[in-house]
Amino acid sequence: MKAIVLYDSVFGNTRQIAQSIADALASRADVELLLPTEADPDGLAGSDLLVVGSPTRGFRPTEPLAAVLKHLGSRSLEGKRVAAFDTRLKADEIDSAGVRFIVRTGGYAAKRIADQLRRAGGTLILPPEGFFVEDTEGPLKEGELGRAAAWASMLLDAK
Image: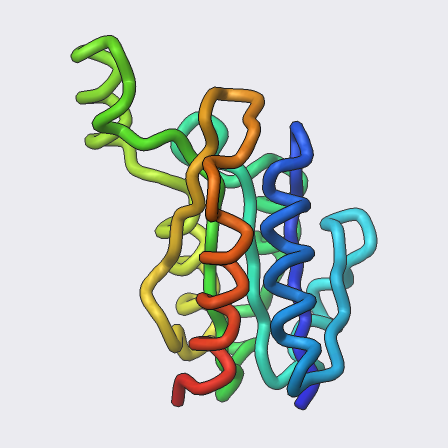
């Protein structure tokens, strides 16, 4: 099986999660880890499994990642297994009630990524997943790298 993990990272947290996912997938797949600047939207369809992740920036993925997803053809991922993840703050741990409300209302990047992958014809094999950071710039919360590896193992087993 060929898997592509496409990700963007601002402070390095999403890169760590993507690497943990790629390492876990490598137990049963040939894995390519790509940044948006290295990705050809047409080439993404050459995988059996496409996993896409981004930090949540203004309730969405980063601009470079969004640009790659925007250029996916409407049926370019037809028959492909896809999954989406992001890194985020836990809404219930945000001090400001107003900001907490905005985060809960605006959502996170993974759902938007998953929606774009489905619009391109991909079959979402697990619900979008969020991995948590301590603060805007990180670090990752304890245990998140292990959780990412476990999630990747579930991707391998999902139909």
